Length: 126
Image (cartoon, rainbow, N blue to C red; front, top):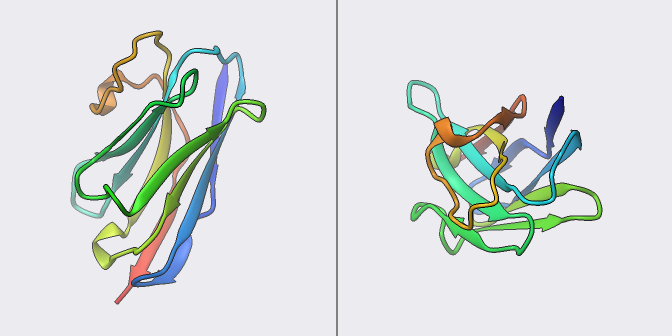
């Protein structure tokens, strides 16, 4: 059993910053991808960013490139999403997820991810 627990969401004004964390516990593996997704009301869940926990390689959606930074601390089995220059359109529930694979490719489709956190709300006011 694997648990993913997100934290760090909240309410922020446009242009502000938030840092999300995702702590993985339970039967984890050394080689996997941690992904961040978000879902706004009435919209489909969309990929935000992913990181290969073994080598730190990253991938970003175009909509967040240059504003968001994903990172990880392997000693803590925790991933982070630093979100800067936030916009109202970033408002959503943010989920972290784990894709248990040795592949070097970072999947962007949610169906590839095996375990999910409960989500954390991010609200950006204009």
